[in-house]
Amino acid sequence: MTDLATPDTYGVLAEPATLTLQRLLPGPIERVWAYLTESDLRRQWLASGEMDMKVGAPFELVWRNDELSNPPGQRPAGFSEEHRMESLITELDPPRKLAFTWGSTGGVSFELKPQGRDVLLTVTHRRLPDRSTMLNVGAGWHMHLDILVARASGREPEPFWEGWSRLKKEYDQRLPA
Image (cartoon, rainbow, N blue to C red):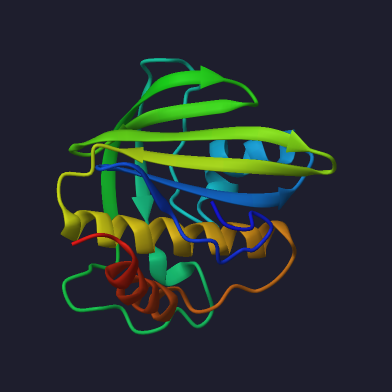
């Protein structure tokens, strides 16, 4: 991995179909955990959706990426104003680990590890079915995590869609064909 303190750290392939990204966030760990689990905080950087914090509990994530930054930037063709996805919590160890199903892929896990006053967040997205999905997911996680770092640090994030479009091209250059 590259310098973890840098908010523009790229995701890496931990396995051929597994993308891992890391970010260092201002702590304490309970604060970062809240950004992962509380709908009102999570919607500021990813997607809303109330979670019943139990393994096996279903929940729905609702993305409105146009609301993540002001201005949001130009939404690419083929993307709707809102996207919804049903998920199930598969692992839970508050405030250190949360994992859940992710559409047709193998799921996503968030692991938190205190590092002094900061918290290292590791996001792992498993079983990405093809390179096209990997490019969208890589750019998406990267941009969403950059917004999380900005929000947790009290800064305004860059326009979501411009960042996502730029990152998709960069991941196309970085990830193997």
